[in-house]
Length: 460
Image (cartoon, rainbow, N blue to C red; front, side, top):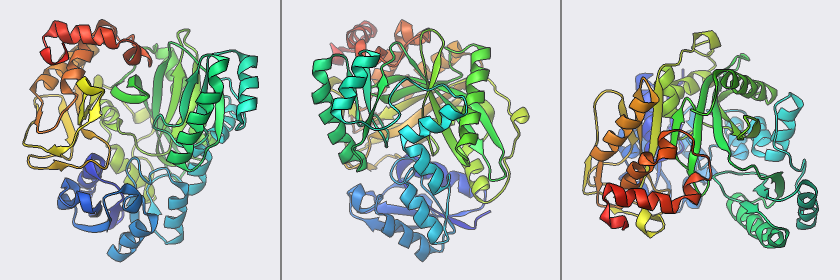
C-alpha cells in the first residue's frame, strides 16, 4: 500500500477519499484553489498545497501544478476523484512519466473509452449490443444523410467528454443544421474536440449503469447495477439500486455484458459501464466512465464494499478483495443529490455562506458532504452540497426513509433543491419505479401540482 497519496479534487469526493485513506493508514495531500482555502478537505488532509487561483482551468485542471504538488509532497500516487482530471488520458500518462501511480485505468484505456466511437467499436466486437448509429465522426451533410436513412428522431453526440454536454436531440430535418452547430460549439468549448457522431434517438428509455472492479491480475467483477433514469437536462438527480426495471434474468445478462466490455477494453480499477434500456427490454451500450461515480455510495450500501479502498488496493498492485461468487447484495439503496440551486428560478445555482446545517440520522441513513456551518459555497464550481443516501430492506421502505430524511435535512444560507426532491419522490411514477429519462423534463406541470398539493406555497 502507498504511504502517501495526493487527491487531485475538491469538495465531497475529496473528503470521501481522505476518509478511506485514514482507515488504511495512508497519508493524504490535498490540493486547493485560492477560493477553496477553507474547504473541509483542506483541513482534513495531512497536508495541503495551493495549486492556483479560483478558476478550475488555472488550478484543479492545471496538470503541471497538480503534478508539481505531488512531486513536492512526496506522494506516490494521485487519486483524481470525479470530474476535473479524472478521465484525462494525458494527465494519466504524465503521472506515469513522473513515476506517480494514477489511481484509475491506464492512459491507453482512458483514451480508448473516452472516444465514444472507438468505445462502441470495441464492445461491439465482443458481442455487446450498441445503439444504431454512425461508426465514425461526421460533418453536418453526412449527419443529414444518415438521419434520413435511419429516420428521425436522432441524437447528435460529442465523440469525447460527458456530463450531458455536446448533445442535441434532433426531431426534424430542418432542425439538423442549427442543432449540429450548437452541439459542435459546446463540445469544442467543453472538451477541446468538436467531433460529433449520430445515434438513433430511443424513446421511453431507462439509464442503467453497472459498477465494475478490475485488478491488474486480470480479475474483473461486477457489483450490480444502478438505475439513474431520474434526470433533469441529462443530469442525474436520484439514483437507486437495484433497478426496479430489471428482471433477475435481464439483470444477470446486462451485468455479464458489462464485464465483457471491461475485459475487451483491458480495464483496471473502478469503472462504470452505462446502458440504455428500452420499453421492450432491449438494452444498448452507451459509454464507459473510467472513474468512480458520484453515485457509488448506493453500491457500497448494498454490497458492503468500500469502493475507494478497492481502488487504492488495486492501484497498489493487490488483487480484488472479493471474487464474483463472494459478492452479496442486500436490500435497496437510494441517493438524492442535494444541490445549491433554486428550483423556483429555473434551478439557478446558489452560493454564499451556510449559516446552519442539520443532518438526518438513524439506521440506514448516510450523508456524504464537505459542507459545515460557516462554510462559504464558492460560485466557481458545481453546485453539489452533498449526497443523501438511504439503505433499507425493500424499495418501499427505502422511499419512505428517504422522504423522512429529506424532511429532516436542513441547510440554511443558500437555496437548495431539498423540497423539490421531496415532491419528486411523491409523484406516483417515481414511487412506482416506472419513470424514464425524459420524465422530469416532460412533467414539470405534474411536479408543480404535486408541490402545490403537498403545500409548498413557494412553488404556487
